Image (cartoon, rainbow, N blue to C red; front, side, top):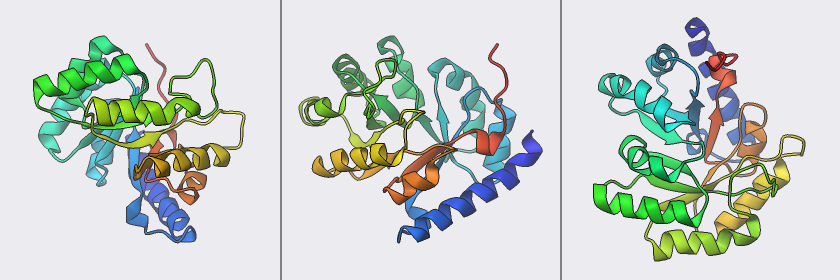
Length: 225
């Protein structure tokens, strides 16, 4: 599996660059976050050897077991939490991650603010917006997003830098990306984490500043034990 990673990364980077240029944007304006959830540390190391530095993980515990040795070898590695965060994992998440992309409820915002104050470490935060109002999916509803952003950023002092979304699987993604961009614009947020392996080029056309890509880089996910 690791033998294919350099070629896969080169292909994705070329596609990102083409999509950015087609949208009148600079390719370097889009950050590639390689989603390494369930993949072994060897796969992450292979990506690092090809120059990749931003990685996404869904689970705090998995990341804690995987990344400390990798950070020793690649100290400029940037780790993004892209999965749901339980409040009882907030302390561990603040210590481990550089970016928390799944800020989605007032209780979590309060716990993260308290933990950042205690630890003196302030990972960038993205508010996750449930653009499709899907009951099974995490995220702030679009109608509640402005109020929640103000609470998290202005009242609690969290370092909210952008928004993240995962559009419904059965819907065209572009309207969801456009909705996220509009919410960000009216709240003065410049970063948009949107787009995955199947739709990242559409996301770039709609203004994504980072795309989260896993299987197109690492191949089919190994079965979860």
